[in-house]
Amino acid sequence: MMPLYTPWGEALDRTAPLPEYPRPQLRRESYMNLNGVWDYTVCDSEEYSRRNTGKIVVPFSPESLLSGCGFQLQPGETLWYERSFTLPEGFVKERVLLHFGAVDQSARVLVNDCPVGGHEGGYLPFTLDVTAALRPGVNRLTVAVTDRTDEGPHAYGKQKLKRGGIWYTAQSGIWQTVWLESVPQTYIRGLKITPLFDEGAVEVRAHLSAPAAGEAIVHCGDTVAARAPLSAAGACRLSLPDFRSWSPEDPFLYDLTVTAGDDRVESYFGMRKFSTVEWQGRRVMALNGRPCFHHGLLDQGYWSDGLYTPPSDAAMIWDIQTAKALGFNMLRKHIKIEPLRWYYHCDRLGMIVWQDLVSGGDEFHPLYTQALPFAGVHVKDSPSSRLGRGDPAGRAQFEKDLTDTVRLLYNCTSLALWTPFNEGWGQFDALRLSDRIRALDPTRVIDHASGWHDQGGGDLKSRHIYYRPVKLKNDGRRVLALTEFGGYSLPLPGHCATDRRFGYRPYEDRESWTAAVEQLYEKEIIPLIAERGLSAAVYTQLSDVEDEVNGLVTFDRRECKADVERFRALAAKLRF
Image 1 (cartoon, one colour):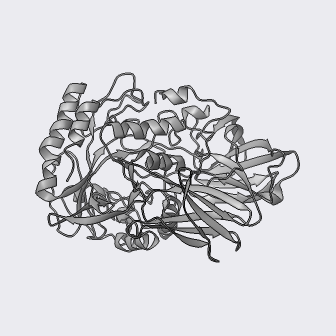
Image 2 (image 1 turned 30 degrees about the horizontal axis):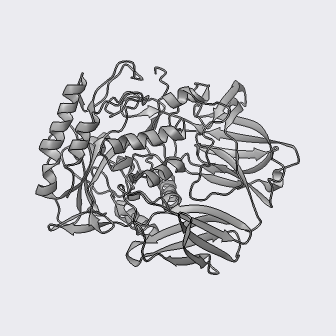
Image 3 (image 1 turned 90 degrees about the vertical axis):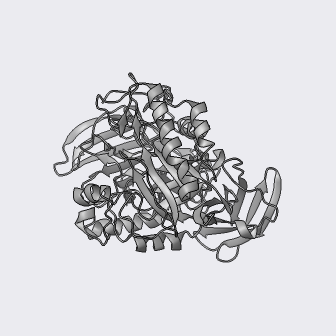
C-alpha cells in the first residue's frame, strides 16, 4: 500500500483529533474528549509476551496512517491502550459516564485497574458508568482489544486480513471518539423522536434512568414552536400545525430540548415522511407524500489515511457536499455504520441516506453468491452455510446488531431506507428480519435483499447490474430500483493506493470515462423511468478505495474525476 494523505489528514492535530461533540442528537454541556495520543502495547493473548509498544493517536486504528503505528493486529493478539486523565474541577455531578463511539472488535475496559465493563462487536457505541472506579486527581484508563476480523461471529463488513479487489485493509481497535460526561443520578439515557408528518406533530420518548418530571420544547430559531410535559413513561406529543418540511432542497431542522429532573439534553429533528406511492400505475419512492427519484452513490466510507475513521469533521462534510454538487440526492452507506456526526451532516446539508446493515458470517459458496445470481437464479434463504450463515452464534449476533443499529440511527432525519442483506452475503430469513425491522421502525422503506436472492418481500425489487446492459422489469407490486450499477474505473496517477486496478470497465482518460458514464445514463438508465417506473439508481461509487479505482473522487479526496456541470445535467433528467 502506498501512503496517501487526505488534505485533512495532512493537517491533523495529533493532540486533539475530532474534537467535536460526537453525538449531535443527545448533547449535554458536560463533555470531556479523550481523543489524542495514548500509549499502546501489543501482547500475545496466550503467552502475554510483549510484541510491540509505543504511541497511538486515538481514534485511528493502528493499521491506519493517522494512528502513527502502521501495524496489523492479528487474531490471537491483544492491543492494550492506556492513558491518564484528570477531571476538571466541578465536572462531576453525581454520575460519570465513559462513552466509546466504536471499538473493533471486542473490548474490555478498566479504570484505575478496576474492570468497569466491555463490549462485543466493532460498529456500535457503548457507555459505561465509571463513577465507582474514579479517584481524586489523576485516573488511569485502560482498554484491551482483540479482533478476529473475518474469523468469528461478529460483523466485519468489507474488511479482510488478506485484502485485495473488493476487500479492504482490516482495521482494529478504537476507531471512533472516546469521551466522558457527567450526569445527575436520574438522567436521560436516550431519545426516540418520531415526526408524524401527516398529523402535523412530533412524538418524543425519553428513556430515563429513573422516573422524573420533565418537559420537551421545540424551537424554530429563537421562537418556541411547541412545548409539552413528559408523561410518567417519559413521552409526549407536540403539535406543529404549520410546520416547515425537510427535503434535500430545503433541509430545515427544528431544535429540541428535553429536561428530566436535573438533566437537560439538546437535540433536533426534521419533519419529513419517507414512503412509497403510486405513480402512473407503478409504485415509486416518495418524500413527504410526493414521488421522489433517489439518485445515489454507493459510499464505502473508507479513507486513505484514516481507514474507517474520517480524518476530520470537514472531511465528512466535503464528501457529502461534493456528492450533492454533482447532482446526487442520496448516499447508500455500504456495509458500514458511520460516526453519528456523518448522519448529522447529511441531515443538515440535505442528503438522503440508505443504510446497509454490516455483513458478516462464514465463508460462502461462490455458486450461490456469484454464479447463480448472474444467471438470474434466486434461491431460498433459509439459514445455511451456502450463504455463509451456518453458524447459529453468527445469526444471533446479526439479529442483535440489527436491533441495536435501528435503535441507534432511528432519529436520523435523512435516513430513508434499511438494507439488511447485500448480494446474498450472510443472508438468511430476509422476510422475517424485514418484518423485524418494520416492527422496530415503521417509518422507513426496506430493501430486504439488495441485488439478488430476492424473496419477494420488502418495498423494493432491487437489482445490481454490472458488465452487461441494464434491463429491468417491474413486478407491479414493489418499487423498481437499480441499487448498484456502473463502477467504471479511471486511475489517476499519484492518487492510487496500489498498483492493482479494479473496476467494471476500465478507462484511461477523463473524457472517454465521462462520455461512457453519460452514455450509460442516457441510453440505459433515464429511459427506464418512463418505460418501467424506475425509482432509484445507485452508481458505484463515491470514492476510490485501495484497489478499486471506480470512484468519482480519488481515494485521497484530492481530485474529483467527475465534471460537475455534465453530471448535474444528467441528474436533472432523473425525475418523475
